[in-house]
Image (cartoon, rainbow, N blue to C red; front, top):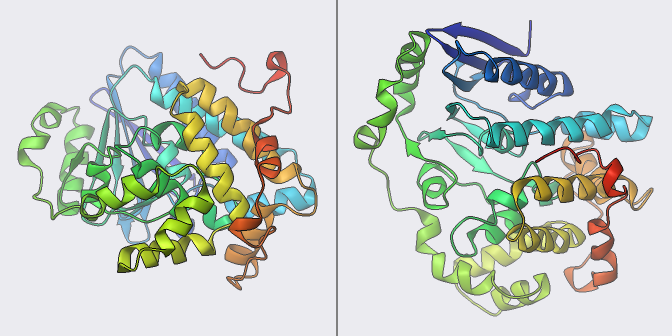
Length: 356
């Protein structure tokens, strides 16, 4: 069965990600199918809007997308499979297409929304979350960085929330997603089937009144710690951030410092630089930067890729014991970080040179 299901009802294009056993992790074929659909519908005057959801293990909804297919990344790099390069180039083009789509694009971010799932939802005109939403950009946990435009949309979160989410990979729920500017409205998951049915009938009238009927939210934990997040994650270096957190005896600071100590030291430094640079970049330039970075993640240090090691520990051997190199935050130097931001391509040959 196809991993991307499509239908049209009442002038609305409807997409269902249909890889539930993998939590709808995006494969290259899925990225290509999504791109082809969105381009066709963008240029079809009969299509007024597009909506996208995930199919969970128990039926529609319940899971949006857990990200990119990291097992494929691991296999491809060891096999010298050129499709690894295609994956990131085409994924980032898809992200760019969504951000500038030109027609209403609605995302039902129910359940897991991580990594690549954020990439195909953050450019939406309406980002719906539910009480089941589990949102994160957890890439530093696998020796990567928050890509798919993460340098763009995380850097535009209020205060230093973007740095916090990017470095820690902390998972947030609906209330935090709204507070961080990463979602637009929350609805009860029980309402999702009826909203989808309305879309199948071409009824978009409910969208404008959504905020008036949205579910009440508890206090967002991010707001509870916002002062501390802004204070610590505005510091100039990862070392300074962690040192300050470790000097604070509060449970939140202690837990946050311990979490950072588990992440790839090198990629923490790379990620902080990414978010800081991303704050001053438009989307296309940010995606070009991230395309440079992700190639370096696999090729800059042959035989010593943090990303390959992180995926091995998390998803292949599953020993949860990554051997990071360098092993300590204090051992990372600027000379190790800055090459990630040097493009391996001249401007005229960059794979994303045509993004406007």
